[in-house]
Length: 390
Ligand SMILES: [Zn+2]
Ligand SMILES: [Zn+2]
Image (cartoon, rainbow, N blue to C red; front, top):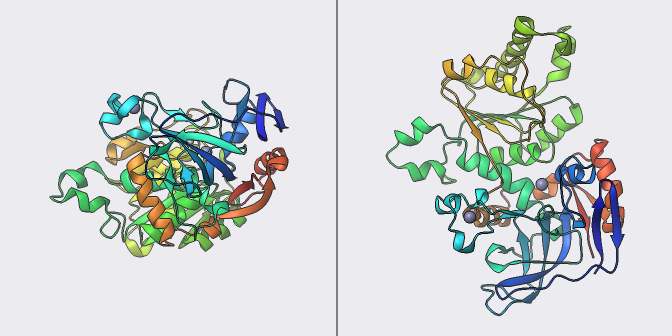
């Protein structure tokens, strides 16, 4: 089969004779139709993340069922499907994490396009129980971003945004997590970094979880304009703020830096003045370590910060007393448990997620994958890019 194979750092070859995957009894063979481009693909390509070559990359996959193993359930040849990028690898989901319902944190997690071959190829084989059917009315060149770019912020917003004291002191806990009565409904959310994950975060917070205000922070005006289209009610360009106030943030340290950071946080929250400066949830999707101290300053007391983007290095000179004083909940998040995938598919089918806005580039193919990676690093892709495979 035709496949995009990484043979080493920056050695990406498009080959036409890679072995077709074989399927086990409970597996399904999927013809990969469209695959989303993620910054993880770029990290693998540049050798920032270790991997065992040869590796077919690509982990945001939408395709069509080609063949089924004998005991594969609930699917038929020709069904349109999506595959989660991370699924449990343990038998019967019986590791400690799976037993707690954290199938996204399985001890033996399988990471498609990293630990095993991915979807930038004509075919891929996966267990049928982790293959999710999607209506044919959802275009596959948009559906492919659901498994990662949409499901990661979905899980963060749905399950990681609620402060523990609210959960403990509410008699009907379940309702806090249901869409129509979700805790975020009518609340104020701040999102740092409007990239491939920050965009869907804004869209989901505004449209699906029905936050009252969603404020987007970035250093590029075109990304902030994009955030407005996705549902942001307010935007702040942090770079412009520092420039207009003659603050050379990178040259500051100690108290001066702390003062500059709290000034930016006050500037951000002043946009929500009509709501008495309340910021209920801050999501850091920036992938930049320096954002974290700003997030801590921006979040209101007794509220939540979620680390959604991967921070590349430790935070320097950070005053962590603030976390204690503000009684903050700092939550990590990782992919999406299997039991939430169905709800995401339903949200997309009900058009409460604007996939058509989130996918901004559909012209790449398997042959132009390397160009797509270069365009991604050059900042030429505003939302998410998807590749056509066949
Ligand atoms: Zn990804
Ligand atoms: Zn497990």
